[in-house]
Image (cartoon, rainbow over all chains, first blue to last red; front, side, top):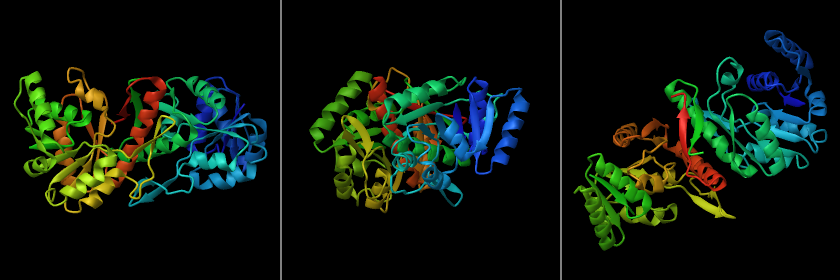
Length: 214
Length: 214
């Protein structure tokens, strides 16, 4: 089962519905499980499916083997520290980007561990942290009737976990995953996200990235 | 005239020939002007053109109004410090990326000013520094018979200089420039380059970037 911690936000909802429609059993979590229950029920009703469950974040972390972190970066540390034991030996996929805003323009925060996903691995030393999907627009994810354009660069220090997550994400139509190497490289993908958000602001669009030559 | 400082390397040669073929007057510079002379003459002979001149880096910096820095990052500081006065009030386009290598894999060096182009602007306070073309493969540039695939993200704190350089680069067939915003954003483009080089190593290819949604 694939779980989404903080899964009631746009990123979590978008990923849950895309994975559910591709046939995966999913479960979305929130601090408040009544909110997760309501959103999961609505999504199942809307798409005529029954494979999106719900619970509070702790329940979701216990039940799923693969957990996506879909909270904003600012909530990452508290969430992961509180779930460290239950996430032991599980695959944790981090989608967060450490962003600040200056004059309305996004920039990468100067954080101690450089990358949000490296920080997640340090917070969860016994989990296999994989970074992915930072460059994908949450709003585009939620529009399941539209194709997703863009590549998903996946990084991890665990080759097995990386391959498993690449395979899962590739099962969603239109996604193409690329092996971005070790987890420290996730800082580059986080930077790409900051650039895309700047371009979005400049060009009034939702941009994405496509790697050419592969 | 468009000059290329350290223009006898693959990046400088590739850019000079593409600009020359698009009709610009160009001049390539080297520490050793006899080497620049020889390379410029060979390129002119090969393509039947006469608009690639040569000189040492100081002569090139004096004669051109727009200067491309096409040395490796490691040579940037010494080059720019030595040309600070002659580059005053000129547009300086930086293509460098602060790269190190670990186990054969490239990574972004932890430099004081975070971005190579921000560092260049600090070294040249009276020049208009623009960053561009970091993500473009030097080897692809040199193959003028092949199309260039990929976008060129251009950053600067001078809107006028940025627009002029975007216009110049757009005059080269196949290139598409995008306004990447302020010069500090060049750090994100430098990071994209590091990611592309990691992908090149993994996939045995020369990758590039295309921004979707624009």
